[in-house]
Length: 361
Image (cartoon, rainbow, N blue to C red):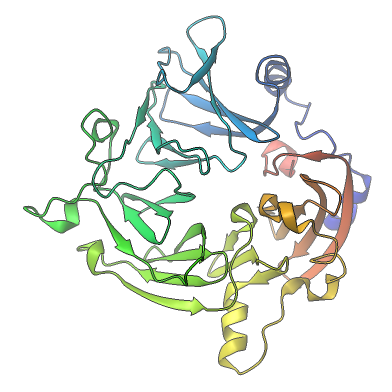
């Protein structure tokens, strides 16, 4: 409660902390060159770092590598001076980077671009439209059981074991299923069973044995068969409630928190237990229903996002009148109490947890 109250005295209008010299330099470069704010800093192998800058409607991926990155020519939008800085501009505020097997994988829904992967040298490769490959409208991905998993349309896709950059173009094999060999070694896809019109939103690993597949208006679980994922089993765990914002999902142990399609913030296990007991599951945000969903801009609710810091979960969302996140509530996971809301001086593009003085920025 005390930590949540401290937010009242913190100026969070600037999403980049100024207390580390390196970040001052990054902020200057982003403002002058990439026209955005720092979304994330990712390690890609032992020699490369990826800076993700965001501005309304875009995500810019800037690679810094001592080896000098080379980029897929179809995706380069600008080359800054020198051989160590290059930008990859993806016109989607839902673009996401996922780390898996020493590669950074990129999904860019609503852009028509195929999935890409980058190695520690800064080389990007296009997955292309190979047999059984995830489509260009894949919305999310995770790395689990030594494979990449993506969700797109009504299918779940998995890669071969330990995929590498060599499995991308010009000879795409990362997701191909080879029926002449052992199925456990190769990629493939599995039909899910969403209702007609149910759009995929996210996938979340569960106990290293299942994937929770979130759709706009329902939720499924796929229990993975490690011997051959084609024999995995699936079950619907929520038929009326889905997820409205991919980046609102936070996993804490066996619990998964998410913003539903109506703008309520929920806990998945709590929801299921209530249903089993014959009760109508109430969202965690029920006591704040005047704020969530009452003050949520439903048109841009998909931009809502959450981050976990110690025992507190920070949920940011666009309020009525804003198309980007400009308000926040804080959930105390110990007491399940909500605090806030707080309104920011200006909207921001990304909420992330930083190791700088244990703060959320």
